[in-house]
Image 1 (cartoon, rainbow, N blue to C red):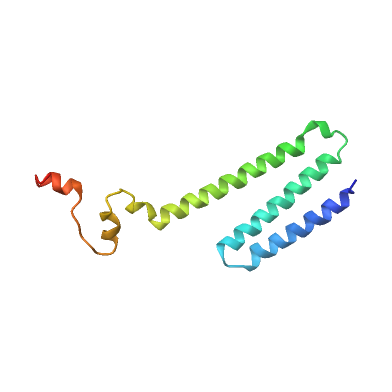
Image 2 (cartoon, rainbow, N blue to C red):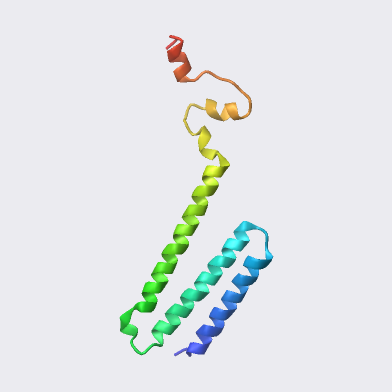
Length: 120
């Protein structure tokens, strides 16, 4: 069986790499990867201390890890949603093909304009 100290050393190494990546880089993706590494190091600590505790049947470490994974998933979803809204990608999603052309200065008649002018 692997001793607790091996898990703690691995967790400390992961946390150090994540902290270094989060503090020294300007790229947002690298910073987020660093934060994820730090969260995974904390999860490894939770699991190791749970496994080596006096009452491993209590599942307290597992519950902390599941909560931490849920928080990380919500953070990633919120950041992805924010980037999607900021990019304006969904502006040309009506399906007519003309909305994307307007973005580049082209004009075209949509189905609504044809109905308004009585040409449908």
